[in-house]
Length: 179
Image (cartoon, rainbow, N blue to C red; front, top):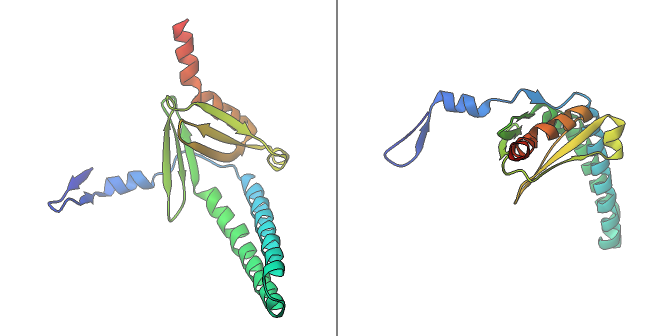
């Protein structure tokens, strides 16, 4: 419960903080860590190759070798930090809950976001499977509203189909009642 002080600032009580830090029951599957690690590695390497190409093209001749060495060090540091640490934090701190009235997705550790999408506002729920996702039996779910697209995943393929069914159940029930 929140109270308001005389200066207009809210004074948060302990139950409010506990409610905000609550995670939802469903989380990403452990196999998603391998997918996230491979995707992070590919993204870092592709960005590094692009940066090296730009350095070879734009940097003056005398500075090319030092620039490439600095870029190589940055690529290695990025691989050391992004793949084992960021991928695990992403997996550990992503949770979701799909109900008949809303879809709730919580992400983040230090800067957490809690997205709530009303099922009445959801226009489309699509399931995305690329070759790498299919290889691990995973899929991503994208919720489309009028002004926002919110991705969730990767989750197991069967779970993605169930999430889609649950999120669109409001429309199915409404159309069944109308007939």
